Image: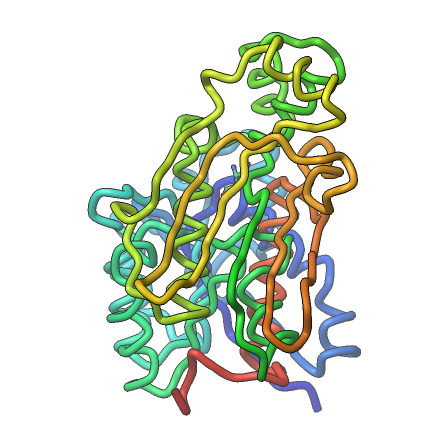
Length: 351
Ligand code: HSE
């Protein structure tokens, strides 16, 4: 007998709708291979909610793809938002893929507080609330005996925090380096390999759905900095904030810089670094010329990668993964599966 998993989905933009499509596509497989009967029982945006009435999820997706606004669909109630939906729709897990402001983390902060406070598991692709309030949110999850998963917010398809937790268990992680942003790696690769100007490469990344509609956080290095904060706080309980990260983006990288690096047998990458020392964590983001045989120097296009240095398992690099809405949606689905079947816990009930 498959276990029923009722999902309330918050956000029906590029990632949210890709998640809904993926659940529809994989339902039989999830039932067969994971023993989970995953059902989306509600979908909410900041303005409207579908509560399982009227069209099916497949029907909603078809109409939205055909250009009909979510709020205009039959069965969708206007005037609802995420909070009201979490309070009213009975779900086992809240899956969140919404835009949220880095300054206050809203509306994600409210979503996470209400969902965890009501004893719902959460899988989120949204970083903003976690970056500012991770320790408090993790404590709330533990108090309520539920899981808070955010692999989708921490480089999405590339396993980072989940890899550390599952595969580096029992080792001490001493240092982490990563090319953690697909947009910037894509731009730097296209500038270096095809001679594109920065603006042309950025426009291409936007067309392909790799860059965010507002790419300033990507190219300014802040998306990478957020991922470093999430990793440091999960791996080391570090209490790191964005103010602790030295951040330099790629806007000033020029074609001659890339050519100089290539002549020296190197490639320029936007590298995020975390190092744990006796006086705390050193965290920085900046363009770095890596040797071509460096595991992160080889990454092409929108590929990402992360290297962990550990005391007992040595140096391990994970790389690859799809930097696109479908990859982020698949990372959310991975987190949902792990909540209900995961071989590893935490930050979870036992905390
Ligand atoms: N736009 C990001 C990237 C994904 O390019 O990797 C969101 O974190």
